[in-house]
Image (cartoon, rainbow, N blue to C red):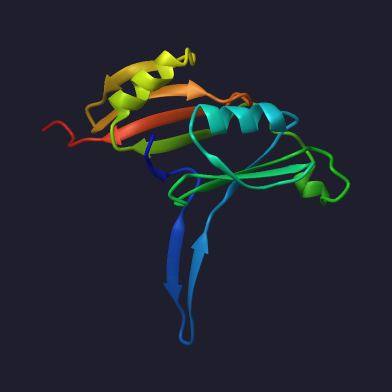
Length: 149
């Protein structure tokens, strides 16, 4: 599967001050007990690769290095309180833009991955379907098309 852009994972912003130009790269992180299940899912289902891993942290990336996502074990003593509580399974979704959503849909159906929203076209220009990761995060897999007139 070729991943063009993971819109919920990476955001590149540039701004100019009087003296410098800075760029930002966003890496979304999820705090979860399910590090191994998550690693297996993102590698086997979505073809992500491991950039770094230890006993409490997992950093994954797309093949073309356009996006990263990280997962952290909750309540780890190395982390400050703000990074302690586990994700509660609600209120987060990810969008993965691909070149050919129909092909990805066919591949995932062939792997018996449960489909949460069957493939469909939206009037605003998305052709997409949705799955869930082991943490309950909805993943919208999409190819953008021209909106209906």
